[in-house]
Image (spheres, rainbow, N blue to C red):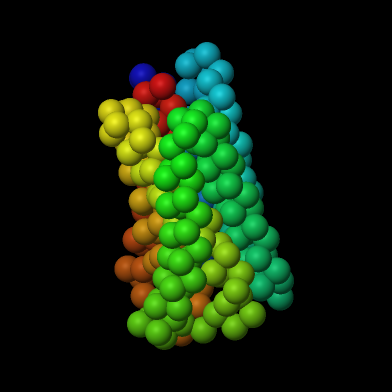
Length: 233
């Protein structure tokens, strides 16, 4: 428990330095701090995965966190290699989507109860609807300009919102009594919040500092909460 708390505290401190660099003078140093912050949530997942006896769902969370780390690296590099901006955004979204798919797969393998088909139907139906209509609503309300990323964005948001829907559905069929699933669900909601705000920072002409700060805080809280959920196995 002590090691977990230390890693979380270090992660929050590192995140604070990253936010400061992000809104003042983004540099290679800022990217390094971002990488350190991401390594810390991966380290938390790895530590808990080992200390909890290598649970299968822990492996999926660890792998999902690693792909999140790769996504962070890709999106961080776009600040340096501005001529590769679109390619790096696409690569980052690809890594994050794989991470979400890994999370969903692990949850189904470990917590799906045979015969409870509703836990599959709800995410399969609602996730694409939320992904499509959610991205279109954001485009209208926030005056976003997706450009070539419009349909990619719909697919990505489908993956993002599926995480909340899958974890909630499995939580429901398990009687709302599983602490791990509750903690994971909170992390999934934070992820959905972060990526919803993220659309404004990438596809809006009017990016505010409050959006940059809030999307970073909710994102890292999501990653650390999901990693820490392994503690409750």
